Image (cartoon, rainbow, N blue to C red; front, top):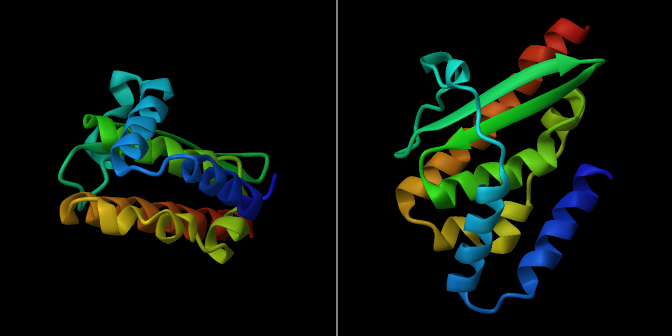
Length: 140
């Protein structure tokens, strides 16, 4: 599936919930399904700056695609990590650089998260794009 198709799938999944408390519950459920990182990956190098809670993001390039793993110590943020990874993991650097992650706005996440969580979400997106740029230099 393309990044666009996965984003639309996520939008469709969230559209069945009318109440934001139900959407938060779904986010928590997604986070609970996320595989925990090894302790060795929970280091300062993988820590996302700008998040109130602690978020670690690990990127590895294999066969021209970037695969992400991540975790957070906050349940809702862990769900946000799971959503992002679903969209961006297994993509080429070019896809990460060129695609807009509009599902964040389409779902209203920035408006319904606390300002610190919203800033943390944007910091995660920025870091993912930076990995795309960095790995695109290696791939060239």
